[in-house]
Image (tube, rainbow, N blue to C red):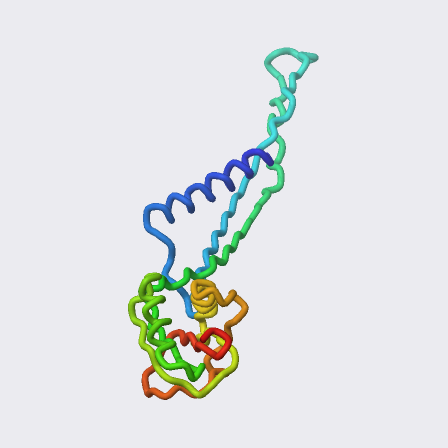
Length: 190
């Protein structure tokens, strides 16, 4: 019986995988995570036949008692339920999907423009050079939910993936524009 339950579970998981392959994954939920839940239920019951019963003729053949029942009551029903939940991490946005600012916080003229050109050569399309209040260190600042993209941008610039921070920690930019990521070029990178 365990083998039949295992076979049903494997079949159900294969059916789910085939459904995903044909129809695609479910739409993204808030926060970017995908949640896939599969529930498989199986029920089995069996009837156990009793050993055959024979009646020895001890009386004349015309007065034979009827034979007792040849089956016993059904065995108890067994129900197994298995639930599998998978959470898939959201995919990162590609460089060409991001709105990026290169902010000059170094005090050296032209640094933001040079950094913007470098990012464009790496596949970042929407890059705008801006000025910022001075900063000794360079960092990539990100909007909520874009931490992975900020880490990738910092690595692309050669600053290391740890030189990132939320946008609310960023020095003041001298622009009214809004950006997904800001590569703040400080005095250490000028």
